[in-house]
Image 1: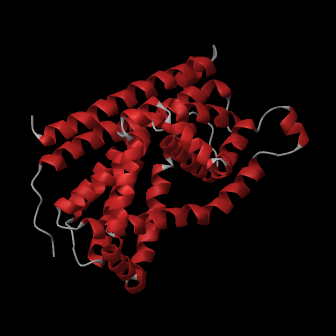
Image 2: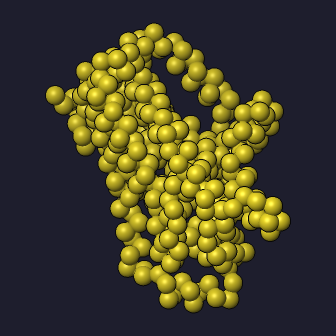
Image 3: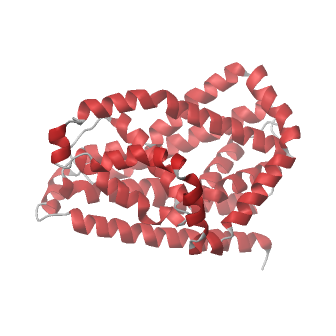
Length: 343
């Protein structure tokens, strides 16, 4: 058995675990949130011919991510072909989805960049630049999203008495609580079976060591990107906005298909928080945490008896589709010889 086959099988095994967990939890959410009217509403409201169109935002997101790779590789003087950049982008997305805590995403990205002729240090610089721009995008839209949320849902005594805002408050307070309790949380995660089984602690230490050792070499590439290519960074930022807007538009579109148009801004931030929580869960697909927390939050925006349907549609295109289609691209890219750099 070759090392390539071993890697594909390892990712596949974890991805299958994530699929099973996600489908099981989504089915339970659907069971507990459905009512006698759910089936008739779904039959009457949903035009099933339009459901496959939910894949369009996924392809837009992947195209933007690949274009960001393509542009940033030129910033450090090691240009990639666009098709290669898209393949690496999709493969890294698959690595995030098919690994506990998403730790495989960075490894897949750096490994494929190395295979394409970009050293680890420069690849780490590109990764740091992308993460910075992603965070900047979410910071810039958060005030607007929170304003839209507070305008949509009244946070007053009557609302609390009816118990309407518990789900949203849990999501909004989760990052604050994590920052305050990060050390106890980390110690608790270390005791989890998946954390020990996949040696996440050791992998994180090794990743920190590699990033630290390559910092001096990567610093020059990082400085080159941020000081000498500001126009390119602006384009990258706009692409990041389009990438995440497309990816996180799937849930609002799924709810719209059910006949309940909603403001997408709060849902973008909510999905970003859910993604972070799924990474902290250190389990394939977040171990069902995404589905459960979404089931707590979405009844604030739509009828409860349709929440399960919306979550199922959403996860099919933002998780299952990433695993299945992204896995094919990952396997193909892993086995394909590295092309010559494009100039």
